[in-house]
Each structure stands twice: as C-alpha cells, then as structure tokens.
Image 1 (tube, rainbow, N blue to C red):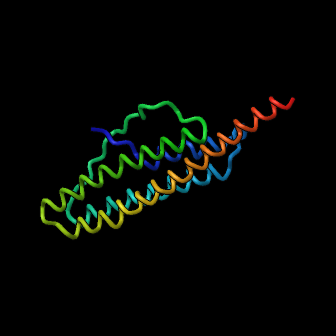
Image 2 (cartoon, rainbow, N blue to C red):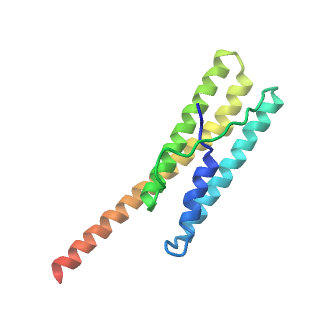
Image 3 (cartoon, rainbow, N blue to C red):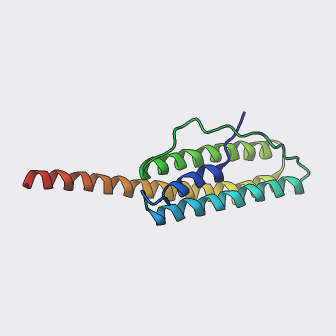
Length: 149
C-alpha cells in the first residue's frame, strides 16, 4: 500500500497560491510552512525508527488520486483529509505499540505525532469554517448588489 508524502502534497497548494494569477501569498506561506513541518515530522519518525532498530524501506510514491486542488476551500479540505488519514496511520502504530508492550514507543507516537496532527486538524477546521463564512458572505453581498442595481 502506497502512502502519499504529506510534505509534498502540502507543498503543491503552497506553490499554486504563490503564482501571480492567484496571488495569495499568506495562504502560500501557510501551506509551505505546513509542508516544512510535515517534512521535519517525517524525518523525526525515521530517526526514531533507526534509533529503535527499525528499517526504512523507500518506495515509489504514486501520484495522488485527486485532481489538483484549485481554490482555497478545496486545498484546505484536501489537507484536512490528508491529516485525518495520517492520524489513522499513527493510531494504528500506537495500537501496535500497546499490543507489543512498548510504552516508550506508544508515548512517543502519541506526543510527537498524534498530538500535533490533532491540533492541525482543529486549526484546519477553524480555517474551513471561516472560509465558508467568507464565501457565504460574498455570495450574499453579490445577491444584494444585483438586487439593488
């Protein structure tokens, strides 16, 4: 089963929103920052795995099965789904640690990987709520302008 690299998938919207025809530099910075954080988390996981005697198996990563996310809400939704998927993987790893009586790994996984992802999902939910409110307000404003013309 191929897992998509989170930092690469977050980098795509960061680069998209930085283009001159889109020009949302703060959104671009947000996604590029998230991509950097995900890369650091992946490196921390590989380092922890090596310290514990595990092996990293490099695999070819398939192209994501979704179309390129165009638009702020779509990009936020894709990132939200991605982080929820990552949490499921870490929860499986956490459960394996508990089953195999490895409290150190369980604690590390929970503190370093699950906790931060939960905070990111909360942040993403807040951003999506605000984006939907802005979209709704913009639609109502457009209807009001058309009505009063």
